[in-house]
Amino acid sequence: MFSEDDLLPLSALQHLLFCERRAALVHIERLWEENIFTAEGVHLHERVHGQSPVEARNQIRIARGLIVRSLRLGLSGKLDMVEFHQLASAPEKRPARPEGILSDGVSLTGAAGYWRPFPVEYKRGRLRREESYEVQLCAQALCLEEMLGVVVSSGAIYYREPRRRIEIAFEVSLRDETERAAKRLHILVNSGVTPSARYEKKCKSCSLIEQCLPKALSSRKIVQGYIARSIAEALKREGGV
Ligand code: SF4
Image (tube, rainbow, N blue to C red; front, side, top):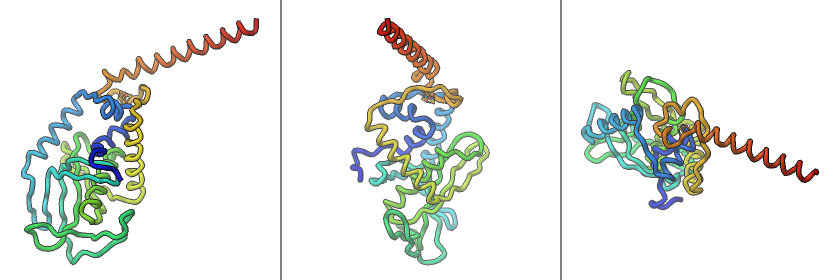
């Protein structure tokens, strides 16, 4: 279990899965730079959080800007939106890992019946499947499960431009991947070591490219390797004379 002081942001998982160096630059070296993609993302989240914090729509109750945390995973964050879907009948107890048994619904103040949480994360751009988004959403679900003692079986990623969302089921494989990512994130941040740069196609869309300098640092490594090999070979030749 982590203490409150050791919690890392849920959003760091997305950086980690995009690029470990990026996660380290942001969360170890405290670097940040906006580009068009991140600025649009920030604007989108601000718009969502600027809406009414609670709303009721038929069989759904909506909460925006909920602060959640998981001491088991060592994560915390502010959620864009959580829908609470009303259950047709009284909640049942269901087996769940690792807590054991969880209810499949919670009661809400001022609302009759029982409700199942369904987190919704807002993203910019076209409709698509992204592993890092799904892990981030699943981590939100694991936080809700730990805090509310309720099973969160699915959620959605809402894409602003097409105004459509993809529903994501929190299967065992996605839960395992999320737990592994949270562990890796803590190991990375605790190590205090930023991984080396390696230029890849994705670097073009990374807002930290000017600070990271992946092309320059990758080629410097090649030059350093060449110089080191040359010196080693020269020393070997000298030793052989
Ligand atoms: S520029 Fe490339 S290597 Fe550097 S942090 Fe971004 S994605 Fe990672």
